[in-house]
Image (cartoon, rainbow, N blue to C red; front, top):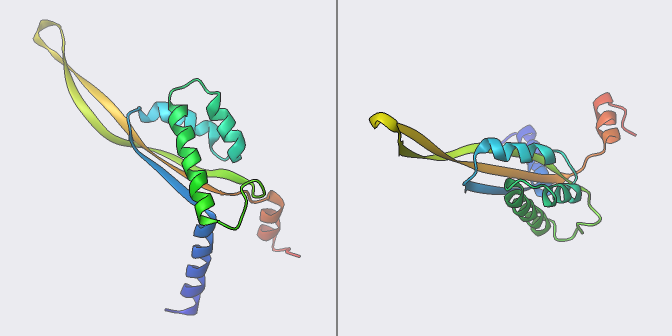
Length: 145
């Protein structure tokens, strides 16, 4: 393997050490309902996101709160030497994908039948350190000090 590939591989390993992932599969809620709640916490600091989910009256927020707590626990397991209180974490990405669909038939008038689709979804949360905007801007301008 060339030196460029090995240095890039090392960079990716370091980035993966900082991030923690939690996945929820086959949640029996429609993806649309889950996306409404997920959009409210995308890019938000972790403690604030927990507060948003705690006081949201939608049923999907209960499952997302549990999933977010799992992602935080995964981050703590990866970074044993660091304290959660000292490190500012945020919800870097949250994706809601459609899961399997249970198809049922309901009787309708005049000998017809209507299809019922019971939808489910898959949710993935990635928790990462907050990167200050000033550091990003300096790196983009190329004026690091």
